Amino acid sequence: MTVLRISKRPQSIVMAPFSGDGVLWLCLGVSLFFAVRGIATDLRQVVDLTEIKQVEKDDKIISEGTEEALKLDTLLKLSQSTSHDLRAAALRIISERSTKGDTRDLLLEQLASKHKITQGRALNALNFLVSNRALSRTSICSRLGDLPTYTALVNCLCNFLSEHLERTSLTNSPILPKTRPMGEKKALSIMNILLPENVPEALEAGIISRWLCKYPFPCAQTDPSRRRDVVILMKTWWSDDTIMSSIFSTLSSHPDGIKQLRKYGLMGSMIEENDQDDDDNDADSDVWMVDADETGGTFGRSSRRLQEGTPREQALRRRRREAMVLSDGGRPLGNEDIIQRPIE
Image 1 (cartoon, helix red, strand yellow):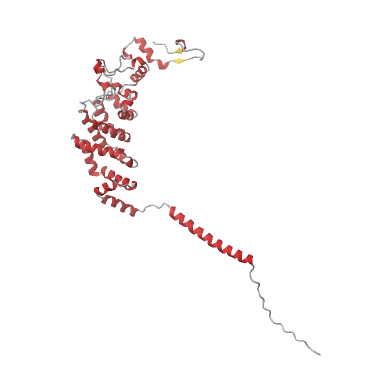
Image 2 (tube, one colour):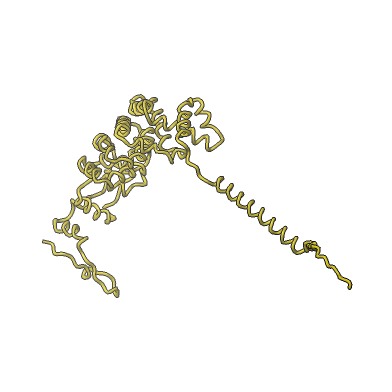
């Protein structure tokens, strides 16, 4: 009998090679992995580049020290640079130096000087500081809006009062003098810019009590004098002297300014102003003579409504604002449509 012996041998498993689709998906996955990492890295760089970092205090101190170390000759060259940033930075440094410390005190002292050349240089410097466009974003005006500056500027304007001698203008106006000196307009411009910063300090410096109350307004030199109508005339004839009208507008919009204007006779009481408004509505009472000096007339109104007519007519004129007009609109208005309080 024959016996068969079967031996069990381990069989080796042979894996099939990758198919074409598997290789494609593998490459695609690797590509996506590196793409995601690259995009994330680029986004981090964008965030770092666009981040606004605060300047450290040490760097600021070094910058301030560098500015203080710059000489005037260097700043002068930088102010003439073709680069807008360098020019603006140089002008800012010069302006800051000019408005603090001994330099500021010297500037104000020269501004109030009676020496014309010294005064002219100070006016040019101060006018540049407050009106230059390159310095519009600085705090120059706010630093100059104090009592010493207003006092020096009022002293400068008072010095010009004695120079109203020669005729410099041919304009016939109740508010613009024909003898205004050339340098006074620049001082007026400076005052007009600085006045809104601090009206109470300007009043304390004497802008009204020392200067405006003595100013030779043409309307104040007529017979009879119309000095008490200066504020009203500034509103009516503002185009003749826009700078002075702006100064009066700023003063008359402040309660303390109104008090001083009335105290020194440049503004009438509320009753007088209301009566004056009635006069302004009448065309025949708002006539000004041109070349009044040459024609022998008076440079002013031909007649005052407050001084003409019977007391009954004056009372009727004052009550115009208390009247009511009732009409159905079907016919022209007449006296019978006006209802007003009886005159006692």
